[in-house]
Image 1: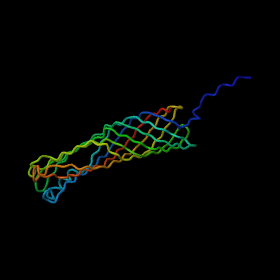
Image 2: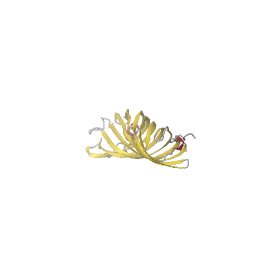
Image 3: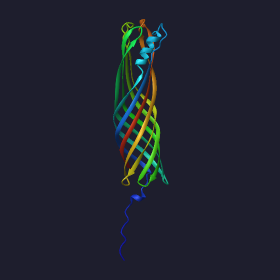
Image 4: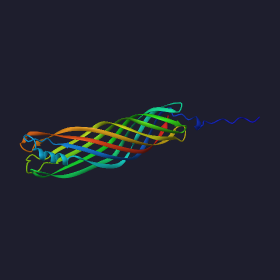
Length: 243
């Protein structure tokens, strides 16, 4: 009687259940929209037609694309063919855009508006729901996005009506938004897997800055309102190790 050969663990018995951690890299592209509101109506603000010209010059959109890369960790639980989990990740990005517009106020002359926006890093915390075909899992995901947003705006008021210099607005804030997307993950052994995924990130935020009155020098402040609507797309690949 021949001895029975020992049976080695098989990938056919693979389960997605467990903790994992890994790294990712990919591309990202973003659409940055901003709106500048300049109060009008006359004293102590701009006359209405000049306020409209300045607001229009400071309202628009720009695009940026770059590289994104970082780390992720999470936990999966498999029930029959369904996989439920949660994942957190943090990544650095190279997103950086700027633009400059010239404008003419009907009553005063020419001026300029410039803006630059950066997204140095981005993090998400997302539930995941997947369906397992053995070594392959398709999943959908969505949840919280946390982004560092750096913005700088300069509005140079026409010299003819300003004795107090430009409106300068600069902020570097951590902004909360939302994200949704999906992907596919393939396990090539019982510990290692590779994945490809797409995420969409939506952000909307606003702030108010104060500038010196173009009519009354240092005595009056003008409440410019700056609002931002950012849309970020992420396409990346990653590798995970399950413990």
